[in-house]
Image (tube, rainbow, N blue to C red; front, side, top):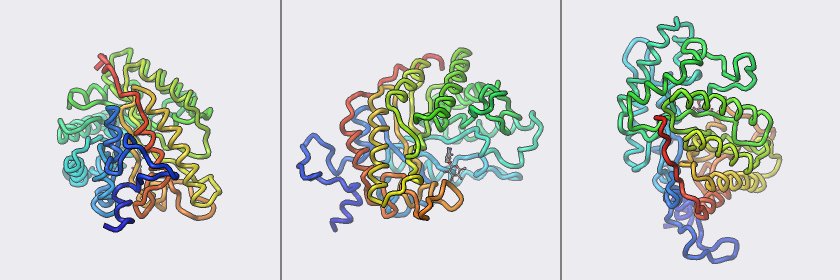
Length: 374
Ligand code: 9MR
């Protein structure tokens, strides 16, 4: 095998690093990211689209490193809905089959989200919407019953700027389902598949900015009310779309994790990537800065016993949603962003090595006395 091919398949991990021979106890090349995560009872994985997952380099990288698979698009309601006919589950089934073939846990994403609500329901009567949302949730959960590790039941309902609405986002969901009835989604989900963990999933809470703090406060208030009324929720999904232009404080993040744990929730990092649109440097400097933020973030996460899994949002910089033409912020130099662990050719970047080291060095095990509020 060519050295280049070997490094690609192994994620580029060398036995000699920075001039030092790596001790036998350090991660070995054949140990993929999920294997390393399992040492502390955790899992590591990726969000994928079927069209990327069956092509190189993504295919081999998943085989080497994936212990969790999330469908980036394929399990969203608007993607599978047909106004006139039965839902089209083909792409969702492909992602399910991929997870099985890899022996990976499958995350279901997402049962209720304003952005994936089919357009034809935007002006529905509330009763019609409730009937359609309920039927969708039940049918999709029934199809994957017993095969989903965790369902993202509800996604992104917080908007801290919505002061007149207690920080709840105003959307098709708040209008037609009702914010006070969000817990009912979890009750329906628990009844539909009692074997799946149930998550609320959201973004913009991981870094040290006033607006993140505001979003954390709204979230904790919302979760407290849900838990008080016995809502069957098991997991807080933190998307972790990190950004180099924002500050990071491990101390504040860990305090937030303690608050979530106190509600009896485990924590899953569900959509990790690092945007570098603001970094003016060349590729090497950008990659070092991205790797440093990954290190700070991963070390903090892995030091907390409530953190259960880490899922990257896509696999290589080439298939990252951030670099698609209509998404993410553009760099002023016109170059693509470098948000993930592997470059567009599938070669390991410095961020891969820091994440490998964080997983390899972790000593605190995932240890969650599962909440009894379910
Ligand atoms: O990456 C996804 C992008 O390709 C889709 O156009 C978009 C709408 O379906 O969803 C993106 O994924 C989002 C995820 O579902 C929820 N959190 C934010 C993600 C990035 O926008």
